[in-house]
Length: 473
View 1 (cartoon, rainbow, N blue to C red):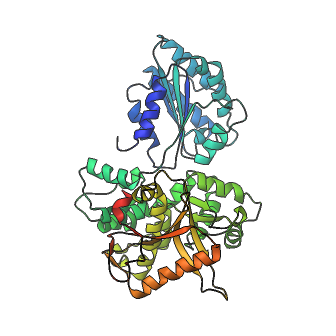
View 2 (tube, rainbow, N blue to C red):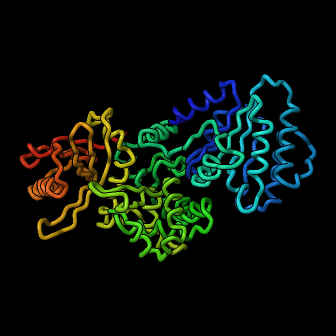
View 3 (cartoon, helix red, strand yellow):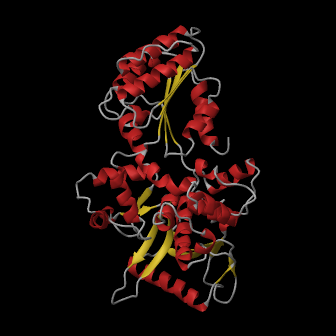
């Protein structure tokens, strides 16, 4: 098991506890939820059930019967239950038949949202099972789902029979850069960290995507095969990704597409104008669901209020797909080697690297020696006015030690060299930021780049801290 140390410790504590445990595991599609549970509880699961995508209630109940047959190690298929209340009564009977009440039992129910969709009575049956039996038994019940928002609303925040019943929750996140590096090393695939960044900007830390990467080939060769060949996994993953999580996925995809058109983020009203989704037409819920599922992030720009909240697309794969893959005709391929040399990619890669920095803010804080200091992270945009020409700052770290770290984020394939124009631009940004915000805090300029900064007369006395890509690992 690569990474996931925290999650494994949580599961170990759950299994070792002396009380019944209801564990909710959620996280986006392909992030490794099933693998985590299957690996930790290998050989210990007494009953396992996986929901069927787009399955009818009758099909889901017939699938339950097959799972019960497997658990009973029976040659005969039991009659499919007529509803979920009967199904969970059958499960209760099966678990009781195992005897030895001292032995910890484990039940794993995967892709719960697929079984509980529509007018299914799944939650009624499951609530009965937990409250009448499992809550009084030496058992661990793990329920899992890729529809993160559904899991939070229907399970974690349930106001009915499951209210406050979940004893442990695990929100499984994509691999960090360090975990991605460890993952490849475990597979005996060695990349330098620049190559790892190229892969991460394309597909993020999603284990199933990373599993497609082959050793002995460069990042660009792998990206070409996985993303641009007609049979590549990520050539068609986008539609599958959103349709597996959301009803009416087209509305969610329209929001994602709108957000991909700008780096600075969009306000709620800008999203409405771009997508034509009516204000009050479920937009608040859709934005919340997309954020809970890890596709977008919301933030309040420095010095602004909640009503000024901006939304940004921060899912690495979605960003890459919408910029470079979406418009390729279905039966055509392109050469990523040539496309990756264009100005379009150079501009995009700068934003993608900035996005990765936001994902790894704890690493940046540790590298700056402020891991224990409370901070808030922002972007900053000042539009041109009569008083100043405007400025955009990639990343601000507002620190409780009365300092603001103004971060200039640059993705470059070599050591960065500041020109006089670059230095003047940084001084101008710092001056405009202080003037517009009126801050009295000390302002440090931090340059975050791939291979570091070459000190010269333009950087000396201007740049306070330099971090290279190693800080992100």
